[in-house]
Length: 113
Image (cartoon, rainbow, N blue to C red; front, side, top):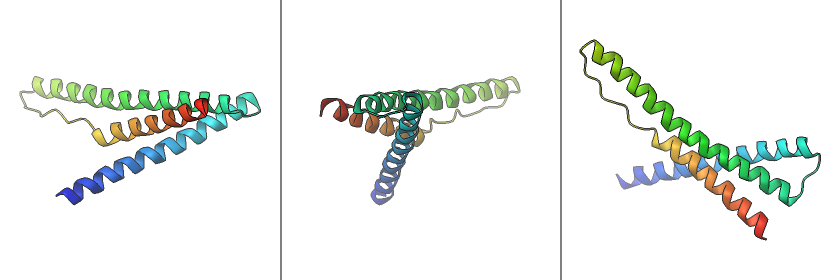
């Protein structure tokens, strides 16, 4: 049981790190296109915006899941059926938040190094 849990935890953490790497690459590429050159301040600002985007993504995932579940429950209640609300997709939310944390950490290091 604990091996499965540790494998799942490692998978979520790896997904978060990969997510951070992809968003960091996209944010840095966008900053390069907009500014035509890169400095540590520009990259730090791009990583900051990438972290904010990942935080919004985590919130959007949680919000959409609960909104869809509520709508389904209301439709089934009209028909007299019971419906168990779905649980939040914690793996995806946590992976996005881990990615945001990694980006904010790298941004902090760039600004204070």
